[in-house]
Length: 119
Length: 119
DNA sequence: CGGTATCCTCGACGATACTG
DNA sequence: CAGTATCGTCGAGGATACCG
Image (cartoon, rainbow over all chains, first blue to last red; front, side, top):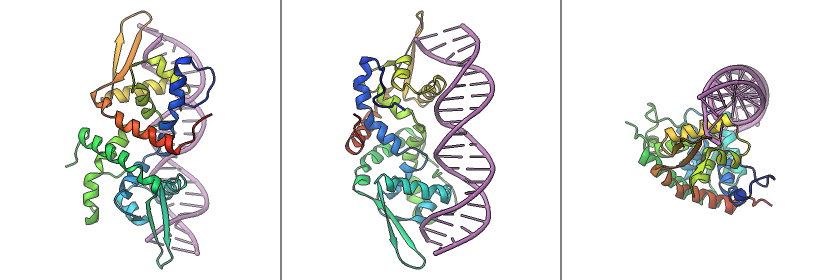
């Protein structure tokens, strides 16, 4: 990764090295196969664990839990547990997560413009 | 991955399944550690292979070539070879790649807002 | 300079079993 | 229902050597 503050850089790269941390942070936080899709799915409304699992249908339980924990740690989503039997857990976007929606929308539109529409 | 057109889906997920391909396409095309950073680095002007290599400083030659080939295959960047000695190769954004710049800018701003500024 | 080719490491992710 | 625990796989990416 374009690590910051590494010595020995050519002078002309110093500004780029100072500016790249923005996109490096975002890229790093959302790495992996699932996080964009999870955020996209939470965009319109809160969802239960099982809804996300069904939506992503070929993600394993272990991976899904890990992705959700990481998104929670990074402050993009919040997790709400309802003490019922059987238990219910709902995930939704935080303020920070909500601020990411415009990016999700642009990525969706970009994909719709250039990608193959299914069926 | 939220594969499309898989049978057996609950009815209420059909619309989401029809719409998710947009972001799934974009996410899939730009997977990995490097592609966003490469596009971001090409945003302002064309760059030589060695410039990109220096900018990303801890990417291996093999990986960098692979990333560039994939971005080229997906039509995001174009590769121009100047038949000089020693050879010179410049990479730049295509029309499709240029259309991705707003997304890069938003991701950069998001990261600058929430990430830790180095130094 | 800008690659290719080969081998290898490592961690993300999946599969499965089990639980409050 | 919504997890946790453990193990196994697989491929992206790194290291190294060599090339036009």
